[in-house]
Image (cartoon, rainbow, N blue to C red; front, side, top):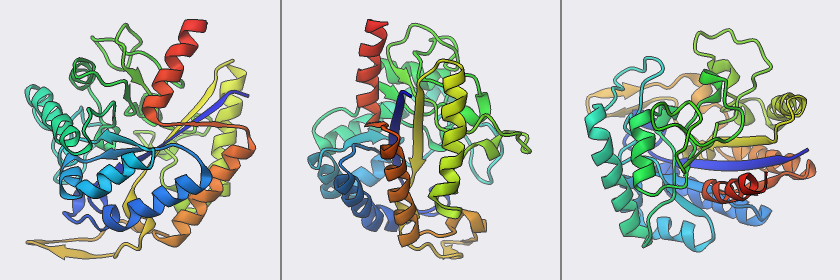
Length: 299
């Protein structure tokens, strides 16, 4: 079976948009680099541009150790079309999107000395304006497509300039994020098909059951199995159940921080080993885009 894996690390503030803290970036990112280096696999660190500017040495270390530095907006803002309500999270205006992406790209390029080639939108909320802007900026890959929600593009594809969820003639490769389409959803948005953060909350073995489901699903349709994951550095250090700052207190839902810390790293290691035992090939997002271009040429 043809199996490809992309591990994307969304390198952002702790617990996503709900805190201003970067403890995970400072302490969790090195742990992940060490693990990936030990396993001999590539990965893409999708950097919030603010984090790249705050931690330039760490950002350059990611590149120096052979991993890809991608882009994840400036401040983890909603750059695309919202799929569901999240408290206090509002999208930026569509006309602001190109400028925001240009600034985020330039901020990261200033730190690493080259233009990032891969992007992922916060919360997997993309848009046609976003993808067209990424195309103009020269990005090779966008790892935003939420398979759990749209359900149609199981394998990477070249999107349309008129509708980013449809196939077309753009040169940027759209990489779907892993979801198990074989299970019956009990959520109006299909979020229970999205398997984050199952590796952490229930363990590697539980996640791999869903991986096996999708391998069979793809095999039955004569499609290669491509698995794109999103994880966060803050998942690999202990996270408090209650955070107070400014004029508010944040209490994340229990599953958001369950088993954050050493166990998460152990389970991720087991996931990598399980894929290796299946003969899977690991890629950075840009690496998969280059490999996919060659695959298309040969087909």
